[in-house]
Length: 456
Image (spheres, rainbow, N blue to C red):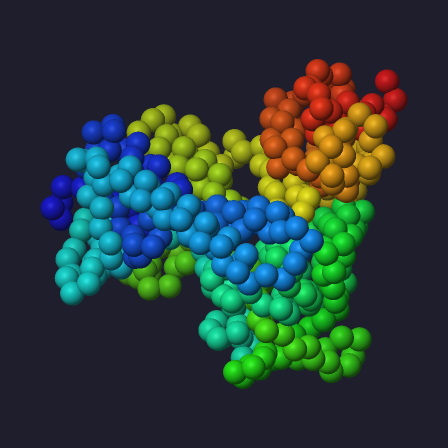
């Protein structure tokens, strides 16, 4: 067994599991090692995208945003049922293949293409022609007094199964913090966000961020900017976050605290140094444009390689490595154009390409089309479903009319952004979208009107 493997995958994330299945179907002998039986299928279906969006959906259906712990527990139970079903399906998709050996255990490199696996009381070694590292990322916890996950202090994983807090303090006004603030406010929690920057969502244009913050304000989320957290305390009854703002020492009490300060690549305990695998300054595994590491025959897919932390990027990582080991090795990360993302606030914010601020900082010659959703006559869909909030904004090359970027904050934006991204990849002009025929009533129709603001 030690010398019979063509491919060994460490971690059951989107890219790794898909590559394992592809290689097995191509006749290769494959093994996949996952440290936890609760993580078959990876972060997305177990603790990330699917479970959180399930909770968000139920939160949005909480009439009146009433604080109802039982309603929350029912939502959590539905979340757990869905993730359990998806986890079982993901396991069977590989375990049912004769060419794939599925192992639940912890893998550690003991050589360039050799690992030691500890599975319960058993320990054994495996060697393969190629090894894929697909271990994902973990919540980043700051070096602050009291910032330890447990009790009333949570990361984005543990908070999903905590008792519904009447008062929630979110440390961090980025994407995860904003999304969770919106969700728990709709579940009826009183949410306060502490962000050390001048404003939350600092990577977004100010007018776009303002729309998101306005939606948070609608559900009584308070965002305190310039708030630098110093320490966190807790006892049986409450937690208290101490911070500095405007040069003054302040504090706030809560039933729960969420630390939402990003995620870091999960590389601890892998023994990468033994295999000669180099890391970047940020702690990610260093890879080239084909996702090969510094050790021949070893690749890194998904969040662990320092790229955009999205499951669909991990899926594309799989395509690149599959081409490298089974195809022509022509595909690379340089092929990626217009990768969109969505923050599932209510309504969601979706963006692709450059923002107006980024375009101007780069000295690009641009024209900008922007309009609030409530003012778009040819966009009845949000009004029909009762939520006409948001903004539609496009950044376009002034000379070529090529779409450089877009920010959409409205009902269905997570779907419409994919059309915009496809148009960008195909190098369509803004006029092409402006003059396209879209179904009615739909959110996509906004493109006809907003892009029509440019001179013909």
